[in-house]
Image (spheres, rainbow, N blue to C red):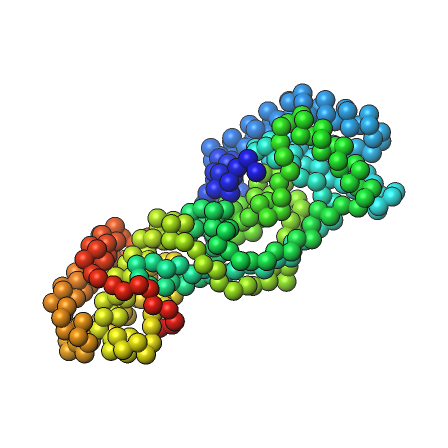
Length: 364
């Protein structure tokens, strides 16, 4: 691959505005007024004028007469795709047409049948990370770029079996695909995009027929007219996977810092934790919530009045001061958005001065 997943997402966000017109109902008019959409239309019109495209179609038509259909005539007016499309009619022999789609937004192409494309795979809805001496279970996909900064790098930590049953061409289809693919690669200098890349979800955008949360790289870089992934049970839940802390986004690290400081204070005051009869695992969906912090602070306030652990007694003054500071920060926080910078700074100062043991395992 010429690009990482993050680089491909950056390409998409040049042509599809993030978060515009999708707050409630999808507002296509609002989206069409953005700079990104204007850039997409300009790319479509420019692509329609590319002589390489027309020359390639002539070569393929000469090679396979009366079998080619140009599916990109709409590009001259700024259509809805990010690719050139054409089909080879094999219905007399295979009963289907063979689709070729070449992105002009990124140097990739795909070959597939006209039928619904299916991917059957096991996907994880959570990941585990050891951070600041605690073990966090994060109820987010390990491939969500909003929480994992380099999802392509994290693949080496993921033990998810994938079974792809897509793009499997018959021997006759392969004969056509091989010849045409060589011409595509020579003409445009591109390579075929594999399904595990093309089906990556793109957060915070919509396309003509895809709603937020349904949009995949294939929809943006090629076309959304195909059902690239069938709904469940094509995607089957799998267990959590381990992710390195270095692969987390800054926003998630900020949340985990606050939670780590909060639960280290609570942990130091709980006899059952200190005795080793139970051990901490902190669960989160990656969002810091005011009610969660207030609930933990209430438990801390009860325990700190009469600490029952040697560690809590020795550090009572320090823990109480840290607790009061956090209570003041929570009182001035509306509880919405990312973790406040002042709260993250408080957590970083506390954790820098607080000696903690290596991460325990288990559940709280």
